[in-house]
Image 1 (tube, rainbow, N blue to C red):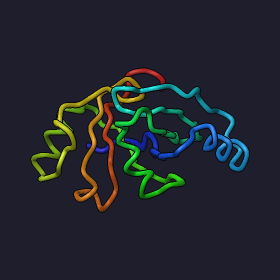
Image 2: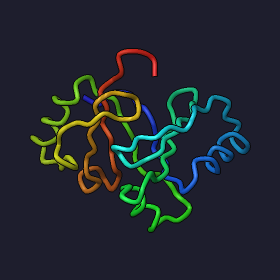
Image 3: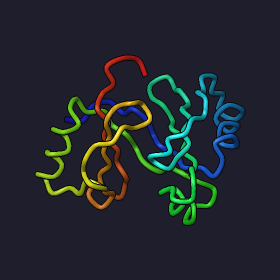
Image 4: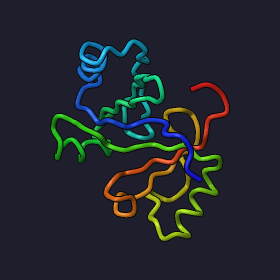
Length: 140
């Protein structure tokens, strides 16, 4: 079921400041524009790497789920990892059948790449929040 690693999500109190780290310290040259995902409560910016992406996420609004993470990690840090799957509904049903907890209602929502995503509870994934996303049909 598991496909390629799509991205590593990094929560940050400031995408603008985090971009400086990836650009100035690590030499990233392909950095997308910051954009809002109000339905998910986050601002997002992708930093391209040769084999994957870093997804920088910053709180959007007072109800952002990232606030809790940043309260425990004020400087930010790794929030989740994301793997591609061929079919998000098959992946969700497989995870549930194996006893994993799919967060939220379990219904996929549209993620930052414009494709359906779900999140699997860290207690089932060795302490890591895992996002599964349906493999995009075109370039991302």
